[in-house]
Image (cartoon, rainbow over all chains, first blue to last red; front, side, top):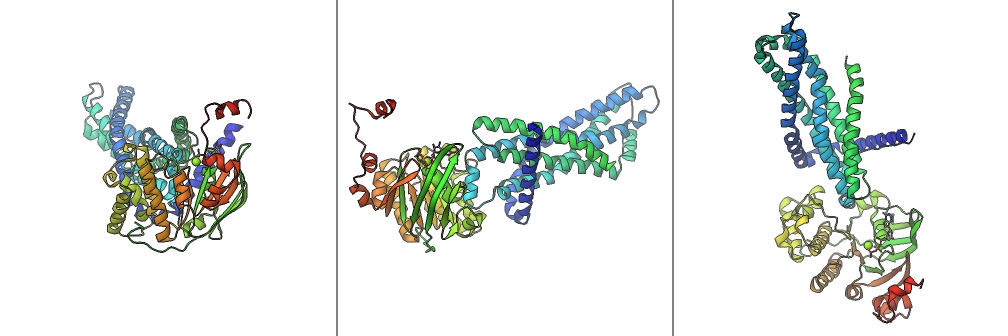
Length: 250
Length: 263
Ligand SMILES: Nc1ncnc2c1ncn2[C@@H]1O[C@H](COP(=O)(O)OP(=O)(O)OP(=O)(O)O)[C@@H](O)[C@H]1O
Ligand SMILES: [Mg+2]
């Protein structure tokens, strides 16, 4: 029972945070320096990881599908299976998990320590709302960077699949055929669905991370607890709403 | 910096009425009342843990009381609009500097965010302020690279950069050497005279309190037990006051023994 009320309470806090932050949207141009810093940080932190990870996932996926298809004579459809699986599920989810680990945790740690060491209080007394100064640049940055990360994940994953098709003897599929069936099945609609999913995931992660960070109370130990809480809550939330977004987009 | 280009500010009065605040079942403020006139320097002294910092947090609007009222220029200190219309600032006891910004950016943040001056003026004001507090070599340092006393001075500098109408100092001279303490005391008095701002200074520094304070309040266990001019404070026969101002160090009958035996 306590868990349910606590969860509802946290969701309420996060929603209030988002509404307050959106109020400051008109002042975004003034935060462009901080927005730039955040974009740089988020891109640097996640892009290489997302690319490597997606390449591996694409490769393994092609290997598994190729193995199942090997005596069925439908080898050329490996491209469509790998392509769609990456775009509809694996790309957005893998990217979101990377964002949780590299960005969400960092945001919670930073905001929680600012809260505990009274920097948030100092901002408040200077009439600089923390929502405008701290949260707005981060939310905007993730909204801008998520499509780039996700597209990177798609392309790297497709490339991973293509390499496996070329070099694994029992699959032996020309990469041109692989990409032909891939582009045939991966429509613009499918791409958009994947990008929308990723965008929702990214925004949720940053909102959860900011909200938990800014509501930290106590000392250094609580900073650690907040980071753990933020990571767990984000992953659960992403996997949970993934089902519903998938259903809505089908 | 206010010293070079002083702008006369509309002075504000501060009125604290019967303020009560508890954390859990521990009542920290037992109905504190005081009034500070516009432009006055009001010094609050008192033993450690009597609620001086808590009182300042109420005045700056970071804490809400259980009951009672704080008025700044006649308006409630607990409404954020009051602090938007009347510029108020606080020097936190622990500095509360922005740890991920350089000293320079700490000072420049307020005028930049509120777009009060162009960047050239901001630069001049920041450098002026740093010079006055002997911090000009620390401009590009990060807070983690500063000594305790330097942090304190940066905190004072950052508060001055907001050019407030009401400035609260929470122990601005603790951790400072005697000469730097004197400098800060002089600075508080000069800024007050030149800009007409209202100052409330929490301090244990007798020198500071008795020389620059227009009035001094002595806080004892969540109450204001004495309010008066420095001369009245010195002349007071109240045992709480005399004990606080001149604690005799008595090795024959040490204080910690007395409290051990239940007084
Ligand atoms: N957020 C809080 N939660 C619980 N108790 C608090 C809180 N803030 C302050 N207190 C309590 O209130 C009392 C007064 O604290 P305060 O910081 O105002 O003391 P002070 O007079 O400023 O002392 P010092 O001179 O040592 O700075 C202390 O007993 C402290 O434990
Ligand atoms: Mg204090």
